[in-house]
Length: 329
Image (cartoon, rainbow, N blue to C red; front, side):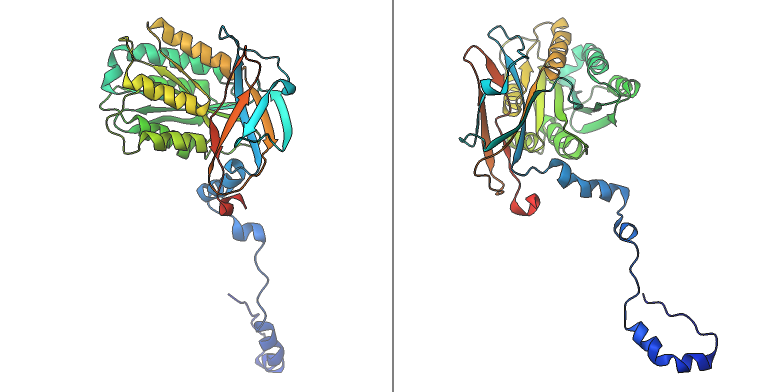
């Protein structure tokens, strides 16, 4: 809308009419850019997401190294690793370091379906203790999500340990199991969208028997979303009946596809041990950043392979999705 100053005298207006019309032909000065373009809080957060999550040709990979006894190896150098990105060595290594202090964004996903009712309280106690041990309130954040036939965010992202504990303890056992829906939501709507000023690790701790009987999302879609969100999944099986189940296979697939690890406790006290092992692994990882060779923003999946001396084993994500050209700009 254009603004014209009201004249004090009609005669004065008549005299200056040509100038007034000339002025009216020119647009008024626009409002300050910040005020004109400031979105609502929710929209502002969404607008920031591409700068946080969309990768260019710079690739970041977090990985773990263990020896033949499964013990973590923390003192290796860059030249001891061989990296292949889409079957080619990186164009350039930009950064390499041990990331024992890298901030953590953690999603704790707890299966609250009827299938785990018998050991539910013990698992909640172990999960609560885990969050107390792993989360550093000043640098880390976590959320708690329960799921049966639908997901329930009992505590959103926070570094407040008391709130996280309340979020865990308030979970009630319920109906069916929508595992894939829960994983998909946690990756897409929480971990992928939570902005970070600097590099962080995004992880899901999944406590479940791995069975799914009601999800609208397929297993492959959940795995795909976890890889897109660059989330590492650590799974703890609640199947204490012994024997290999389809649920165990699901948990193993999720973990291996994202560079995580699946645990299959036989006794109840081994659940707490699994949480302690995850805690140690999250503080014992390496990080490498590199510029990929022949990188094309075409939305394709690029496999990653990191190897080292044969006496060591490297655990890393299987690969990553590059953005489409319009996303990369």
